[in-house]
Structure formats: C-alpha cells, structure tokens
Image 1 (spheres, rainbow, N blue to C red):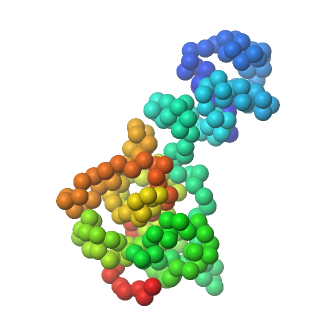
Image 2 (image 1 turned 135 degrees about the horizontal axis):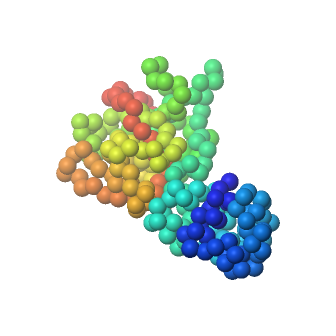
Image 3 (image 1 turned 180 degrees about the horizontal axis):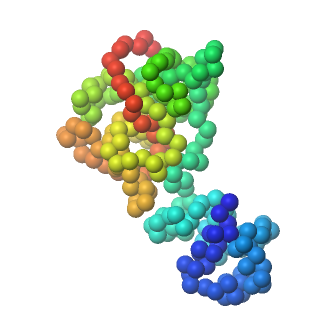
Length: 237
C-alpha cells in the first residue's frame, strides 16, 4: 500500500506544510504526521484525502504516484482512474493437460470475434483446440492466434503466431511484435511502441508500409501477447 508515501508526495506537490494540509483536512498535524509514517487512517479520513486531492481512494492506496508522469497524474485527477500497467487485469484463464502442464490454446480467424468476449470464460477457453510446442520454455503462458491480412509481412495471412502473455505492459519495449486483443478492433498483430508515460497509449505499426501507424488507448486493450514463433501448419478448427 502506497498511502503514506502518496499523501506526502501529494502534499509536497501542492507545496503545503504538514500544518497547512492538516488544517485543510480538519486534522491535527500530529495525526497527519502519523499517517505519513504508515499509521492506518480510518476510512472516513481516506475519503477526505481522496476528495481533497481529486483522486479515488483506490488510486491513493494502490498506485505509486511518485512513479507516474505529470500527464498520468493529471489523467487520474480528471477521473480517468484506469490501470496504466496491465497488472490489474483479470486473472488469465488457461487450460491444462492431464500432466498439469499448460496447454497452448489456438484461436483461429473464425473464432476471434468470440475470443474478445469469451477470453475470460473457462468454458470458452476449454472449447478451443490445443497443442504444445516442446522447445518453448515452461515459465510462460502461450496462446496461438491465426493472423488476418498482410500488414505484417513477411508473416503471411493465415499464419499461426504463437505468443507469450504480457502481464506488465510497462515492460513492453519499442518495436516489440505483439498480438493485441482489443475491445472494438478485434485481434491485431503489430509492432508495439510504448507511449504509456506520455499518452497512456500504444502506437501500433505494421511492417507493411502500405498500412499507416495508429494509436490505441490502453482503455481499449484487453490482452497483449508477445510474439515468440510462427508456422504455417493447418489446424482443423
């Protein structure tokens, strides 16, 4: 919980002394000093802090505000209290084989519309075809998606791209090839450029220069999977 460091950071950001902020919040300076030293405040006081700094209680408790850019802080203050990392996404739904090892679920083109609605549904994930690739490390979770279009040449349309799940979006390096599962655009395969710090979005770039780059806000992103390998085998699905 980041509450103690966050309230001190927010106080200093407003250039307020402990005495001045305590007066604004109708607290004693001693109480405020205690909260900044990790004494747990009652819930009514948490709400008072949140209202004063124009943030949700969740943001003050759970985000390390010192690590955010001014743009990100301004977005939170304006009510866009969203996950900027991907860490708070739902638990990834997976299936396992009889030995307890994770399967690689296969998402063909004709199943992609259903995947954007059913990716968190265990029954849906269980209904997908599955296979394994022995040479892939077992410390990651993988999924295989069939690619549409020719925007990522030399990977041709219909190719099966196997990717590993990215839990923390902040760790995505520029020009990383990824499959992005989106709310409105379905499933796309692009080079990802990380603009979380400045714009809270990703720039998506095609290797086929006939397709122009575009930006996708993180509110539109459901999952991100990093490219690992591809092949052209046929899967009867």
